[in-house]
Amino acid sequence: MDERNAPDYFLFTVIMILAGIGIIMIFSTSGIMALEKFNDKYFFLKRQSLWLLIGITASLIAMKIDYRHYEKPAPRILLACIVLLSMVFLPGIGITINGARRWFKIGGFTFQVSELAKLVLIIYLASALSRKQKDLKNFKRGVLPLVFVVWLCFTLILLEPDFGTAMIVLAVSYFLFFVGKMPFSYLALPAVLVAPLSVFIVRSKPYMLRRLLIFLNPGTDPNGLGYHIIQSLIALGSGGPVGVGLGESTQKMFYLPEAHTDFIFAIIGEEFGFVGTFLVISLFFIVIYRGAKIALKCDNLFGALLAGGIVMAITFQAMVNIGVVTRLLPTKGITLPFISYGGSSLLINLIAVGILLNISAHNEAAT
Picture (cartoon, rainbow, N blue to C red):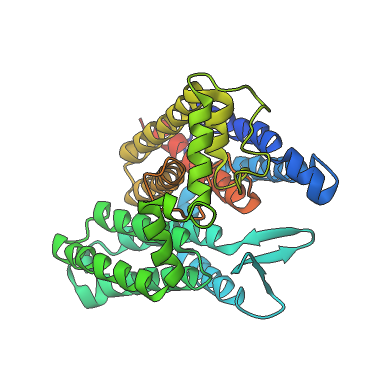
């Protein structure tokens, strides 16, 4: 008989607090732009609220489904996802926004397939690594097929182009290879190849090279590629210890682009100061700690790898977003999980949390 206890509701509560902060900040950062562009200051708020309701429902459903049911069909799920990633390049199916071809349009909404691909790849790698522990000693039979799958997903996402998401896929995959007990000799090879591969990618994409150079000195192009980070730092600096107050941001008044998406953390810093940014970072640390605890307590290798991959994906995405906003990393189009505007990201992350909570319920039952 399959025994289950209550999932980690404290973790779920923290996630809901992050999502609640997101709803408040999306309204604060997007109201003026929405009024100007759509004649409805609640435009982005209503859409994100709808995605949140759908996401919570999907998360609760995922919380009830035994995570072990994903293990066997994982290859078929991955194949379907790869097909979807390929379809975004087909005329009339995929749509282009700001020069990137990453989305399908469903009714009046768009869906970003690469967000789904991140979760599906985690499920597949967790399944493959747990089933093929003995094969991992054989490069051709055990390692090469996994590397090929990661490379294929990475390439398709990179071609959209979406360099930020592609790097998250690469980082999470390498993490799973490491904790999945892939021999060190095989882990060392991709680590050695990452540096020249990154150099090749950056040099082959002039805009990436220019973005990197501007990151080192934003002042060389203050009205161009350096504009985002300069305005972001102004927003963070203006907030001081406690901020200027909710809704009182100056930078969201068309000074800081993408204020409700990639740079929403900067507006949190402006409106709530150091206290607000510290709170958000602390909440993410709680998510990381509770998620890592779930992974470490799991006595099933598939569940441990799945939980670890989900936590790593959320962690890396949050770190990169905050790193970009604070000028610790070059600018990338990566949203802050659960907070930034973006239905696809919110939905998939909430489903991932539902799966993580299901693993926690089985862990509690086993103890």
